Amino acid sequence: MSEQKEECFIIMPITTPEPMIEKYRDREEHFKHVLECLFIPAIEKAGYKPIPPKAEGSDLIQAEIIKNLETAAIVLCDISCLNPNVFFELGIRTSLNKPVCIVKDELTRTVPFDTGILNHKEYNSTLGSWHIKEEINKLTDHLTVSMERSKGENTLWKYFGMKTGMDFNAKPYEVAEGSDSKLDYLTMQIETLQEIVKDVAKKDAQSYNSLRPVPWTTGPAPWTTDLLKHLPEATFGASPPLAEDTLIGPGTGDMTG
Image 1: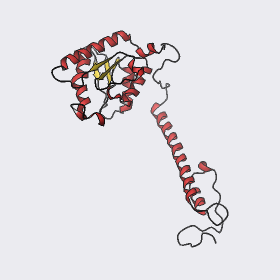
Image 2: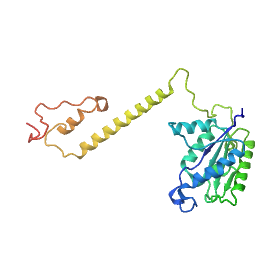
Image 3: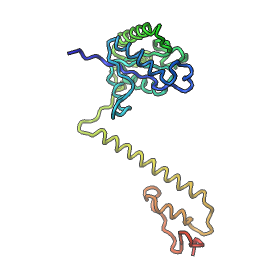
């Protein structure tokens, strides 16, 4: 029985940004090429099990990403093209105070200050057959050294003077025993949607009323009253009753008796 390998989760751009398509040899397929020809071979050579940035089948992609960011022994982070999703996932991993190995290609010249202070390896984006073996070896070494120097922690915590083992040390959310986390999440989502719908209905009603001509009768405009009486009472409070002589509908002529 083979020994279980520690996992290395990969966070990287999945698609090539449109402004960069002409600059990469493999155009739209560029980062797929980087993943298959450089990242996976280097990770396996370093002794880890590579976890690509994709969820297959019926898995919820976001949930799988969060799970992998929390459980992987190390994360390989490619900040090429400064992809926002990559930095979001890097932020989650950093908040958990777990090791990250950062790389970028030579076409990504500027690096944000917060990550620029960390040691990161630059690889050749062409990945030509004449130097791919050398690139794999360099990345393998970078992964090994990053893991050894991190001692199981995230280097950014040291740079920013943060310490582990204190109350502010970020931890994954833990569901209380006996509770249904999925049901709680769905309930929260439904409540949020209810608030959004209520707010939109109120704004639409106010906008509709402001665009109508001022009626020649006193009291609320009949069309406003008719609109409000069909909305939930909790949205605006009780709707004022229609006047007894108010007629609403097609073919009535005057709006008042």
